Length: 195
Image (cartoon, rainbow, N blue to C red; front, side, top):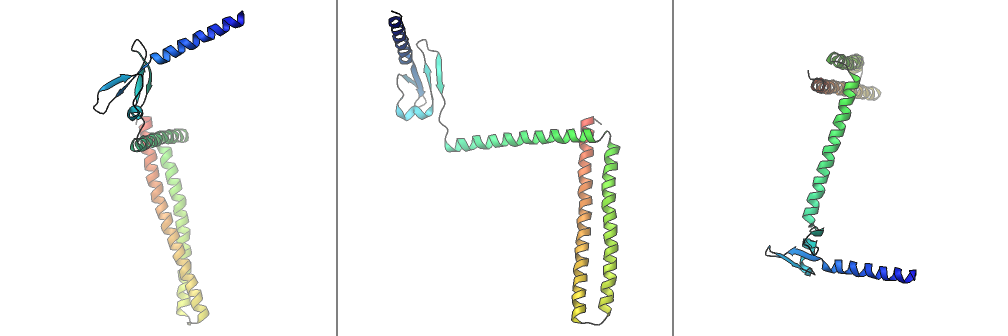
C-alpha cells in the first residue's frame, strides 16, 4: 500500500512539473525590434536572448544574448584593465606601508638619500683615482718605444680606462635615479602624513 501511495505521489509531482514547464511562455525581440511571445522560440532568435514567463506573467528565467567575438574581446580588455587597476592599488598600498614603516619624518628620508648618494660618490672618487693611475701608465707606455708587446699593453690600458669611465657614468646616472626616487618618497610621505 505504501509503495502504491509513493508511486501515485511521484506521478502527481511529474504531472505538476510538466504542466509548469509547459505553462511557461518565452518572449524574445524580433528583427524589427518588436517583442514576440510563444511556447517555442524561432531558431533565428535563440542567440539573441529571451525571457521565460509563468502563467501569471512573472519572469522565471532570463537567458542573455550570446556575445559576439568583438563583445567578448571588449569584455576581456575591460577585465584586464580592472585587473591592472586593482594590481596598481595593491602595489600602491604596499609602497605606502613600506614608506610609513621605514620612515617617521621627512628628515629621515633625506638622510637615507644622502647616505646612498655619498656611498656612490665614494665609489666614483675611487674609480676616478684608478682612471688617473691607468692614464699615467698609458702615457708612460705611449712615450716609450713602439713595439708589438707594448701596443698590446697600450690597448689593454685604453680598454680598462674606457670600462672605468663607463662605470663612473653609470654611477652618476644611479645617483640621479636615487635623487628622483627619494623625491617621490618625500612627496608621497608628505601626502600620507598630510604635510
